Length: 321
Image 1 (cartoon, rainbow, N blue to C red):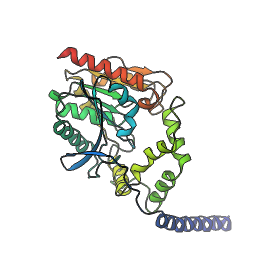
Image 2 (image 1 turned 120 degrees about the horizontal axis):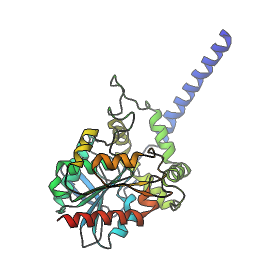
Image 3 (image 1 turned 180 degrees about the horizontal axis):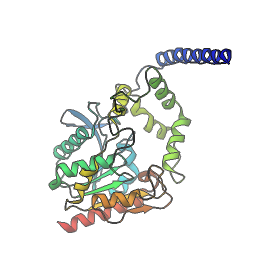
Image 4 (image 1 turned 90 degrees about the horizontal axis):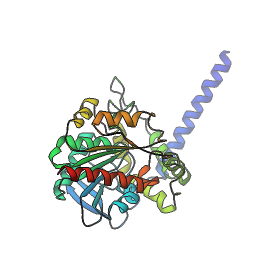
């Protein structure tokens, strides 16, 4: 038994040493950033140079906030429909997309970024839509400046912390929960450099009704994590945790007079079956809209349905003016 245990320990040590050597070699061979795509649009928002996209020229302003590992580009299918009757804006929240990376990457800093964007772009009482973790930022913006937000929509998001991130990505002792170096860099680059891995993750989150990713689509998801400064910032973002708000603050949203809406994919694997109803009750929204056979990326799989739900919220907000 002792000989077998000793051999297993030696084998494990050899594997660790071999993988560590591979990791250092791989990281050295794959270092270097890719260029930013041309034609990006920026505006200064406090201490951040924020990249944004804009659709439409008339109508109620609608501000779209993406979720974790997403960007303003994720909104394009839905934004193009909304732009028929609205001025639509989507920004890259700090830590993602092509916005300048400026720590800290917490909910308070993201909220300030959005408030500054609303101010500098002179948006008058926009509808604010938050997808996934962006729902918490949308709620925080409404709570911070309720007089300048006409409505809030939670899309595939409840605004609550995820397990393991409520304490900033650290355990009770304050120790980081992330994979140590050099392994985390190796893992990130292995995933990003695999078209198949990106397509598999996308398909699992988006579902069978989503269009298959072309080479340009893969690049849309991959490139933001490969530009200069993105890699170290990605680890800092993970350490900061998913943007979220305490339950008590989400309950405060229910007391605001602006209309609220909740829209979920009915088959979203990120949430329990009753999460949408609980979220709607928590923030003071009517019964949630559930999109049949949709998963977590409804803004891509069902843009017409999502746009219609945003339109309904905008109509309710207009009726209150």
